[in-house]
Image (cartoon, rainbow, N blue to C red; front, side):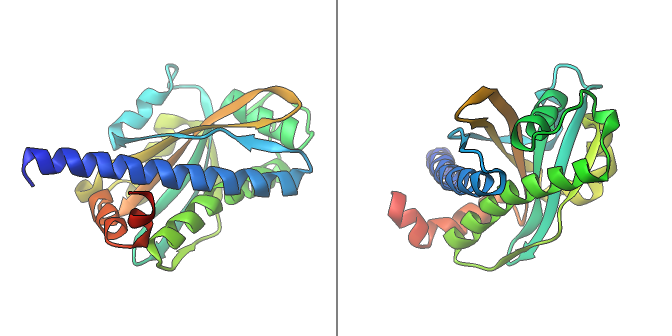
Length: 215
């Protein structure tokens, strides 16, 4: 592609990703509200494309604990999708959404991990379903898992399934959860690691009805 075509493609990719993010946020909010019995809002997300190495830069203190709920998916496209929350946001999820009380991620028990998996499963599942419908292709997620550690350690331990030299771009979705009647937004990130490359997925979307519906 020449420079003009690359600019046009980047603009189209951003428009598609923004629309997918909005649709998925709405579905995630609806499902979380049903699960918790609390009216939950999911902030309309900011979507951008970053390099794998830039994930470390999301946190000014790289040693702080984070929760990383992730699931691999397969089908015509494969990859991993993950929900990344700093420690204070993780604690807020358990407090506000699930009415649990504690102050330290080191104190998590099996039930807490199960709750984080279920919360992540709802949000990640919403994004996978929206992507699957947009592509008009079957995408099958695996059972999610949760890691609690500093971000560098998590990325190092999971790099064999997250990083591919031919597909180092990561879709970063900055979002926040908030109940209508309680506290500040619970801010976090959703990360999508795609195979084949993001460009290949955007080209599929470009050639189907989803792109025509938002163009």
